[in-house]
Length: 103
Length: 504
Image (tube, rainbow over all chains, first blue to last red; front, side, top):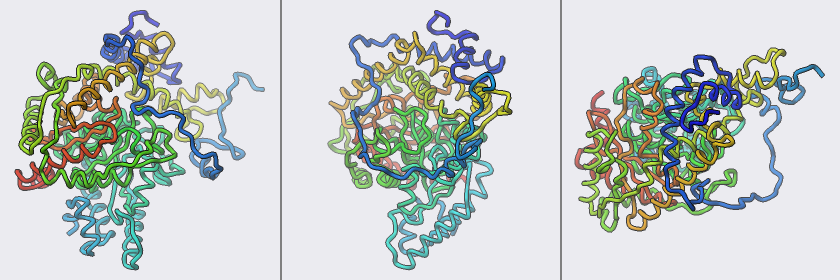
């Protein structure tokens, strides 16, 4: 990716879109590269913060080791879950092929 | 009669239902009639199920007549933001990718409102996946502000704000990640409260930014907001970030505040949120209404002093790294396999292609922008400079709050630097849209409770005053907000929304 820390090239956006599984048109690439460059320039200000010896906050209210009782509880009925799927077959989610060639 | 019922606050509705002067069916029908008459103009609801609502209401009436024990909110209508999963009721989160999806379970918030006897009127419009400050990012068209139909109702909970301000629901549920309850409440003249992070369950909320998302009440009075918070709040073992601690009595805090005595309360005005040297981008009318609100708090006995929180200047930058980063991860679940849309599955394309085509067609522009930005901020070589650094800024903001709360009980600021802006004005400029969240972001990043309460009008449009408190001290928000509300109602000789009703 480009070395300038606060700009995104068209190629950067294309690469990030591919990583994110987003098909993007040429027009979208142009538009997003411009808009995201502006946004990135603004958010890059976090790099000016005096953060030597500052620990990161991942959650505002720290919690550790949250366990639930290890008891069996009913799951959602299979047909109810599959009812929302775009495609189901043999009581399972049907998925497009994941390999390039027929097995 | 039906017009009157839609103008009652929840406390008054409860009284009318209890003494028999109105039935639950009459109350529900009045709201359904109002929706049918006015929502064509507002577009505040994405889904209304009149038959189910009336059946639920009729059941409440039947059980009341039979002398059965009823829930605390029996027969009171409610609207839910469409980010709240509801069993068998369409839930889209404002996105095409979930169009037509019928969830197989209820969110905890929905289940608790149901158990309390509320009648679900419908699901409200929102920015897609709660990403926005205007509700213009909904895949189902923008919602309009009841005060001026050419202006935005705030966002992302803009359907919830417009429905309540437009008298199409007595109250509603919103969710707030960076201000999405407080800012829409402010620009429509409502009370909106973002609870302490973890004090209301996130189970069944369609996730945007998990370390920030929080559901809360949007209502016409502070007392109503406090009541709804008591019903939806409390520990939920299904949300591992849920706080297992007893909540303070919020309704009692609101009642105490409404007596109008704030002596012994110290209020800090945050310089970095519209104060001297930090007023750029704030409208003069907003600052004037805010100042009048602060003066009223002082007149009620509060001690007011200025407080500086220098790290707040970096809140916007930190937020627009953390929220997109978490969103890019959360939204990976929309893969066209388990629910929602699937595009291009013709047997010739593999999973990756189908996924990319599905997400391209199912997501709108702002969602795509944030996924791309978040993917960048989390990627190898950039993680420390962006996401890691943003999390450290979050620590600094938390420290500033802690230092401030050593000296004051609550902090106040305007809720939004601007009043409701015209629809279309900022859609092409993401950064100017993000600026609408300037004042609400610090409390979000620190996980603290914050309420917006009306404090006046600027150019005829509502202005909100924000009250922020330490974690789990939500009761302070309700107390101070109720005191200001009572003082303003007394001075005005009526409610804030009465001014809107009087225009119609």
